[in-house]
Length: 414
Picture (cartoon, helix red, strand yellow):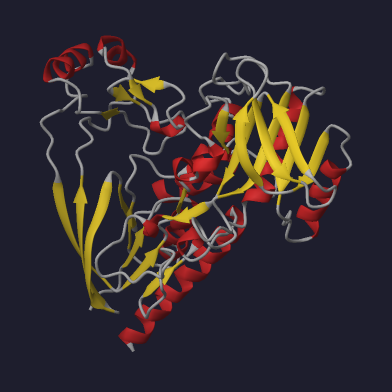
């Protein structure tokens, strides 16, 4: 029997669950597939309810992790299998090599020596990075990563440019075996693949982007340093259209409401209006869902903005516009009647929130038909592994999951 807890997923809910359980006096192992902790929140420009940057929530939790000896975390790590039961789960974890040592916190000499330009995953491919890179400015752990997919000669040049002992390409994969009493599933979500929504022409038109790409464009650490520009020509758009429920509430894609998309769009409208007081915004929607008084007031403020136009109608097609780079959104206006065609400089797809379990399942964990984790004794899902929810609700869910995990250990010990 074990009195330790495993948290799978190092996003906002996973971090919250880990620190809450550790501060109750339990040993916690935290496993994250990316090279940094923070998950999707780290990619946002701002988040509700305070409309603050990721640092206002993540930095505090990073300090709690750093100062708590009960937390052991693994990044670039994937859980391979789970077996056993409450009080005695056996877990196998594969940890990929980072290719650097902890003192490697300044990548610039190695970046200068590197030649290959690689699409930057953190910015959804809107810019490039080098083979030696820092994932993003507030990455924790703040340690460079060596991408060993490039030629060996380039890796040697990077190693030679860096201080001795900083780059270690000879590192190999490790397998870690754990025995834990309870497992908190905080595997989070991923944006629904817009390439699967044929009628919305993502990839065909350069100025059709996703809502998460918009977050990176608006972020000071993003590819345009916070200036929202069209990908085709780096010009500031004068008109922007938002396409709601892009893949959500659709029997051919995600059959459920992704909960956050409406509020994400309303938030991103504020980014645009702050950047340019003359910009015109068009929102095509099925329903606007703004749960709670605070969110409803936020929505009402934008409804009263004469530069923001809400059109109740699902976009059926996106066509080329009359001006270079522009696109035309085509929908049925269910209130005004008739077909609505609106040309815009840039379109933003409010892509749905898909649980990570829809495509990446861990053997030994049960999932429902949509990929959400099914709760079982000793296996407690939280955050977006359980259902689509916002950041605040994810933190609350994670705290509850930590208590449930501890209850499992107490019952087994008794």
